[in-house]
Image (tube, rainbow, N blue to C red; front, side, top):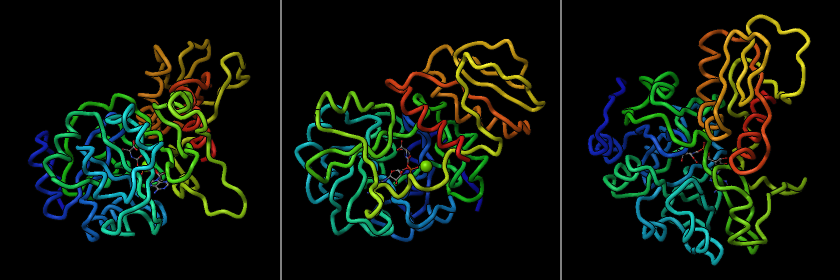
Length: 314
Ligand code: TXA
Ligand code: MG
């Protein structure tokens, strides 16, 4: 199929209404969207991305009222987070409503719900008239796309349409918090930090899978965010004794070493915003090793270090 490029959210919404799949920008990363209630359309997402069927999708809403079409209950803690962080880069996991097909939740009885704050995303979802399930719009395992060019690089001719927007503001995927139990569990770090969640519900804690339990966030066990190049995490005081050719560096501190490709970011925010695109740029240039400076794990720095560690695992 030929992928249509547009910057009109109404044109893009028509594809979703007719059972197609559309990539669109949010404040975190680009998503690949379909009507949550259309099983065949949701199946197309898994096929286009080559996504493992056991990895659940997030449903995106344009209006708080839509939650009742997705979840049987908005728990007390969820309500508190929604008050503060919706719309924004936070996904809340709730008990799923019957009408949500199991293909969207990968067989789970829960559903992740997020309300993007990015205007273009909001207009697209509102025009669809239904919640839109959307994973990141990359081929499974590759770095998430933060530009529409990155979406096209992975998915051109595999999806119906790309809604073109600017590079995404945050650059890392949303924070995911499970609110189905008494204690909120942080499943994935993102721009909303654990400290910020704790300020609202102090008991909130990171989720740790026990040996006997099914992992709560199946997606986390899959290979993630990896460029083809090897990723190494670097303390800025650490000296690299012998830089091989085909090495690249990204960080906030300048280094004396000579790399083939270098990206110095003005802040941790900018580092987070540009790291996935930098990984892609390195792959395009045939870079073999990417040195990534470690950052302090506060605020967005915690999410950034999480993604760097996953990328380093390959
Ligand atoms: O920022 C984002 O969240 C982006 C944009 C497009 O909104 N989306 C995104 O989707 O990153 P994806 O599919 O790449 O990541 C979804 C994550 C996975 O780790 C998945 O396992 C988890 O959310 N997840 C989704 N539904 C879940 C559920 N019901 N229970 C537990 N984890 C869930
Ligand atoms: Mg993803």
